Length: 398
Ligand SMILES: [Zn+2]
Image 1: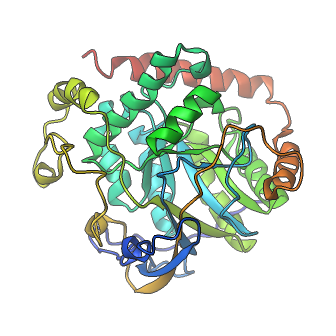
Image 2: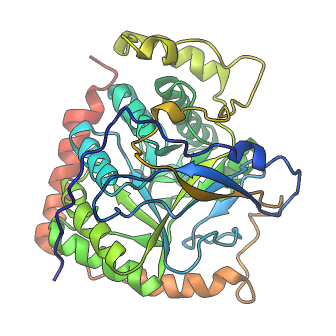
Image 3: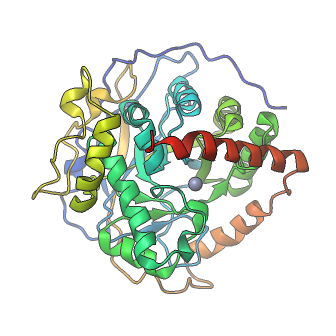
């Protein structure tokens, strides 16, 4: 039985943490593949039970366009996760009435996640994008309008989806989107992967699917997710921050993971993504119309044409940190800098001998999920219809 222990804390939003101090410089060794270990003053919180926290930070140099996640047909990087470690990821948002609840839960558990957000959603809810970052999470791209057939789109259109999504996120976030990408529906192909690799963007698939696209019951979602994480002994976990069930199940899931000894790894990029200037120029007026900077946001707002000659944008030593999530003590978290080798990532995956093969096999079992019930399919359909009609389509036209 999954139960949620009450966690007593609401953290001071204004408290600055030093999540990344020193990490950017820890990477300056120039080593092609070795990991550098840095240290950072880390998030901690005043949750009476200690929260779930962040066990360590992995900072990725994406310049070689690495590919992470077990669920892939292509040669990919070795997982950076140890047994019993998870990375929390949320796709498809931001959707304020869901994303906000998820952010609150993550704060309560003093932990961090990565949000693969959709460009049009970001344009519709730019402040939410900034809230995600302000609470110390990582922002990655998930296309402009989430086409489910991305791999079938003609090359230029597919690439435009990816780049336009990133440009929207860069503009709404003030240039703080990481060069992290996840294909909608994991619908990839060699052409796009090659383009991402050349562009120095890391691609992420998943290790563990929560199936929150189908499961409408929060208690069932929590059980299925926890069972899968346990079965695989951790991994990159996929959620969606447009699903009410996800928001409701998350406290139970995090409680269960903590009780079972799982640790959260927070991933972030060493450098920020530099969007294409032509798309910035195109989107800037649209976004400016919907998102005039106000108050304290003025200085940080993305309206400035700061994507000039210098790039990529780098986090300052404590960049963005003043705004990053709550902390009340100064723990130290290990920051491991990953510099994946440049290699042919489009080669078919090795059948054996690679460290990932076993993981994929194991994962295949995880993904053999019980089919969604009729009710769940119906709920998922009505939800997505509602989202697409009432929310997505109005983002730029009004
Ligand atoms: Zn998606």
